[in-house]
Image (cartoon, rainbow, N blue to C red):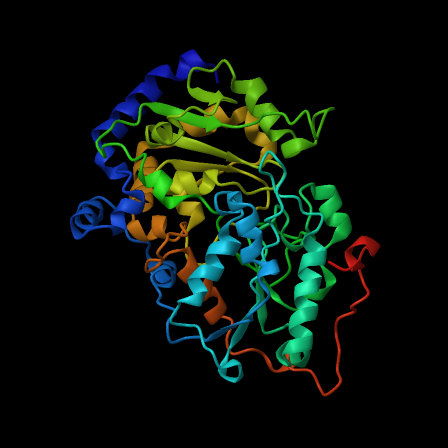
Length: 430
């Protein structure tokens, strides 16, 4: 559809959204800060119907007990002391989950009464000068931590880790590589194949997603986002918004591999379309711009997930998810089909038609659902933790897996895992 042909209906749509702009009030993290804010948002939000809404508001306390292994500092705290940048990148959930559990009501100091065992190892805290995580040491760090707990405590050996969970927020989870082809070649670290993995990566029928994993949002800094909130009655005057790479010439010089070509297609089709505010620039007003937009594009990059999904939900911008077969965070609690729009990668050239054809009633309902404080809170890892936040959603996911099936416990001397399996480089000591 030509851009001129859709200007009038889009102008009318933006006007209608502007009249209802309070529906999209970017309450974000502020929604839980005061009763007054809660009251204001509840007037113009919509509760998720059915079991999903109940699940989202569950309280996991009293439903499970977690024992935290006391590891040497080299596996966690020493890494952060060496490079505090680990606290601010999108993989930081592994650090904040550890801090949360240390003071959580579900923690038990008696391992024999624990339902779950948690190993606090920070596998994404080895950073390049540019601040990007290097995954190459991660398998050795993880293997070393598992060897440590299996020698010091008896609990790993009785199940080969089947009642243990690990937070693995790498691009492709416990496959420990940022490029999909190499991640697939590696596969999930063999020692983790009975454990429950808590990870950001989710894609159906993929070797890096094992059955029973809990998919979580990436870390996005709640305090930083709250500092950029704009007045809730600000009109949403931007139709489609995106900031990020379209090509990754450094890692994909020939093009076509990065984002499976979807981002390149976005740029080539819509770089001159006035309805699309898309660019590689990352302005200081990035968060403010998202709060002024109706649709925020969330295309895959090297992996299918990114912090844009969190930012879109928190700022009430309808996420347009372009990542075939993606498995989204807390999908049993968050009705992604109702709050977002899914566009197949092959249909990117038709994106303008898809979005301009949406009935205004559907747009406003998605915005009402996005304005629900519980929806926003479930996507965040705030400090301190708050009810219904991402920490609690993870615990809810673990609680729903209880009781463990009978096959979890091995017969005396029984083994499922092969400690010598995997690439030779992974077997070197760390």
